[in-house]
Amino acid sequence: MKNTLRNVFHSPKFVWGFGIFVFILVFCIVYPLFNPGDPLEILQIGGFAKPGTYVSVYDTVTADTNKEETLKTKFRLPDAEENRLEATLSSDDRALMIKYLIKIGAATEETDLSELDTLLALWEANFDPSSQPKGITRADWNKYKRVNNSIAKLSSAEERAVVETDENGETVEVGSYHMNDYVSVDEVANHITLTLGTDNFGRDMLKELVSATLTSVEMGFVAGLVATIIGLALGLLAGYVGGMLDDIITFVTNLFTVIPSFVLLILISFSLGQEQRGTMTVAIVIGATGWTWTARSVRSQVISLRNRDHVNLSKLSGHSLIRIIMSDILPYIMSYVIMAFILQISSGILSEAQLSLLGLGPKSTETPTLGLMMNWSMLYKAHTNGYWWAYFPIILTIAGVSFSLNLMNTGLDQVFNPALRD
Image 1 (tube, rainbow, N blue to C red):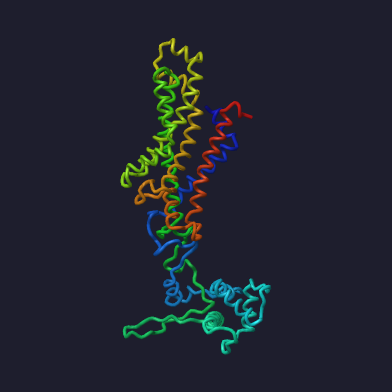
Image 2: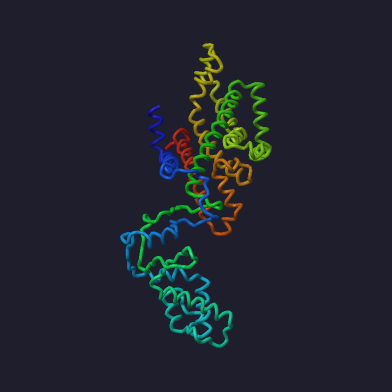
């Protein structure tokens, strides 16, 4: 046993696959300890917030005006004004500025105005808000003036007032903040960091993804266990007993092979109904429809073993059928059974994702799965609207888990298969 384990962990492919799989599992187990709570809790009013740190604007102003002066920190950053302009001027505003400069002849189509500094310098040198050039309509001129007002407001206003409404309904200035005033995020009462943003329902994507990964791996494990047990039991009986029992099991196996297992999976899941489709129910259904190739492979392995000398010796000694199978046959195919089990886990995870994409996965009100998250992102058109954080991390997670399991299986195959052994 020690020698076998030593050989297994000397396989680079198995070690890499095992390491990736364990890293994913450990991260998904440890992360909820630092960020507890319901993964389906709705945080955002709306949906699809970009990844980043979000600070309450209300609390930021409060911290800046009503708290102690020591909470304020003054910075004079060299690029602060340019950064404000960069964030304020949208791509449409810049297109308007370029359009104006070309119309008045201050620039041409070939002029490189991609740099904001160059564009602003030309704009300030050529735009006069008091004089409307000929050939420019009133509507376009108003747009140009709006852009110019935005630039002027950012460039000139060094301080802004904070006002409140008193009991008489009048606005009263209660404080002010300067353009060089900064407040630490830790001093703001409410802020949140969303590493992967939010989904269409406004839920923390990373927290949801961690929970969904654990659930999908758990479902894959249950599905793989069910499929392996059924396939192993039928394969052992068919291969060792033979005769009429072998014919019946082979007929049933061939019948399930002819009908695609995914079609059976769809029909069974649809017949169960949404309320009956819990995660474990779906996992058992996946396992109950995915055992055929395991049964066929185990049967062929057992047929090659049943006439070996040690098996015939056990027969002559009067050992029972169960003892012969468990003691003289099963240990010789255990490595193959383990590899089949690993592949069944990977197949179970992928089957759940396929079912959920069709809307036939587990009910969505209890716990997220990787397939359900893909289904939600697809229904709300995240892939067409550029909300990459709502689907790309899920694809990477599914690929990472499946890749690690298949890499582990390939490594085991190299260890236990004499034809592939170095």
